[in-house]
Length: 484
Image (tube, rainbow, N blue to C red):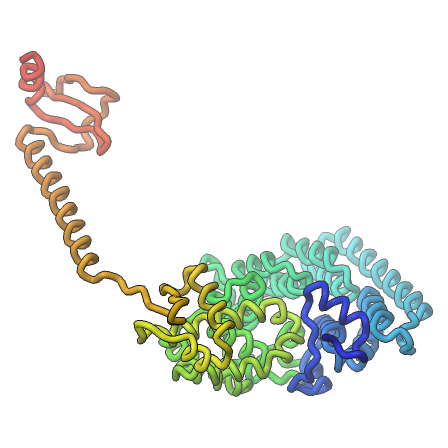
């Protein structure tokens, strides 16, 4: 039941199936949003404002201010529209028409200037100037929210790139715009181009952290959690030491995500897709990823608890940060599936050493009631993720053990069949050699028949699935055998 003070907007959103956060997150909004820049800063503020009932007013006012600092009028309209629905009486609910007209004129003037300069560069046929002209035009379209036009402009740079560094810059621009478009296939394509083994880009090696983070984000958005975890875990640790408040720091990637996001995304994806052995070896003992885990100690704590078989504590740690993750622009859509997979894996790992377990013991181990654990177990068995049977009379989960003796007998029978087939083929080959039939490259005839070689002798040619076979002097004996 929604509180009486909750705006009607959130009630409508909840009924539509979208998450609404009514708890206060653990982060401070000012400190959190200060780590980002560019379009993702506005997108995160708008998402928090339209998801959190407690932070809606503050986040949306920040979103309006952020939109007015840029030149994307669509962002401003989206923020004002959200305020009108959530806080109709707020002073920011009235659009600033004068500002919109002013910015529209500035955008048109800037677009005309850049297009005129580009036409001049094309007339002069200077490739470097044309490339820079398309680059400036693409960045202008990106700042103004014309993402489709931005992709076209950056794509046209390709024919005018004369050095490997130009190719790297072009692909990085396309990756950034594709992430803002949520075009994850394009992100993966451009990252793979820079990672292509046929082309070695020194700049791409220096920007390996950004490429890994971008690929991991694309795989996470696509629901491929295992591959996403590998990309985040392999992210170069140089990004973890980047100064987010220094625009000149090339290691920073806070126009997309921060090192803290890498730790959270990588940790949750690993928990959902790796077993305890891999978590210990590939995550906790990984020196590259350790720099990121130090930024989010609760993620490291949750993984350590999972590896130590303290599943209830691991799940409670993750549940305590659920509100924070629901307010993350990239994570909120996958949080339910990630948490479900992590919980299912915990139940599987818990049940491994037992031949049977009561519902009461399972419910106590995972801090829930017997009815809920029964529903979870039923769902896991139907999906095939848990090999067991449920005894509803005794309320016991019984493991389905494989018959080891039957498995050994089946393996022995299969080995016997394989040995018999191998022996038959060897005997057949021996008989063919004794008959003078061998596989060779000499026969070029299209059909079976008798041909005469240069010495006047007869040869028998034939075709088989393995190739042409020739038997010298065997033609007459075979013909006589056929007549007989």
